[in-house]
Amino acid sequence: MTGPGPAGGGVADEAAQPGAGEFTATVIVKAPAARVFAALTDWEGQSDWIPLTRVRVVEGDGGEGSLIEAVTALGPAVLRDEMRVVRVDAPYEVGVVHCGRLLRGPGVLRCTPLADDRTQVVWHEWFHLPGGSAGRVAWPLLWPGSKASLTLALKRFARLVEAGRLPRPPTGR
Image (cartoon, rainbow, N blue to C red; front, side):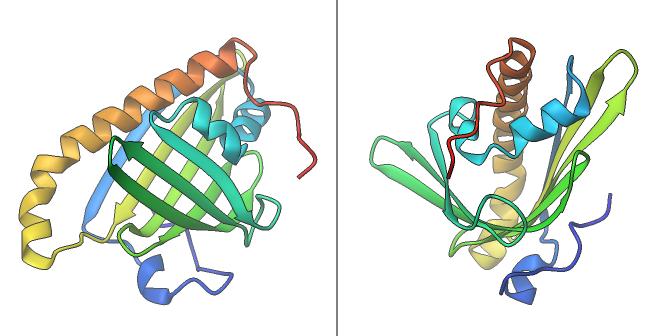
């Protein structure tokens, strides 16, 4: 796979480069690509299928150049993920760059139309590992949990799209 392409909207060049922490999750959704893509890019709607996470658009309209914030909280532990939308090729692909203090690196969500109005969704991330050498040593221990939780989230996403609960109607941001 290739990276998400050139960064835009003031994203630092370093954050836009692929990092050493890489994972991919995939799901097949029984729905047309246009509907699946609309559901993926309903940023606030991600709060419905990514566990323990609230997502909101901080700047922009959710399209190219927008800043998205995802806050994951488990008890007192809080992880804030800021990402800039750097490319939108509807209904096939959206590229982001995670540009927060802890999570940095490019990511891409791809929708590939399949026969019988099905769509393959591929979510690929290339994170820079925090903590230098310690981060590189810890990555093999963290990676399986990250991939598993992302895969479970995508399966929940597929069920919500197939049930007609996503994408949500526009709220007139």
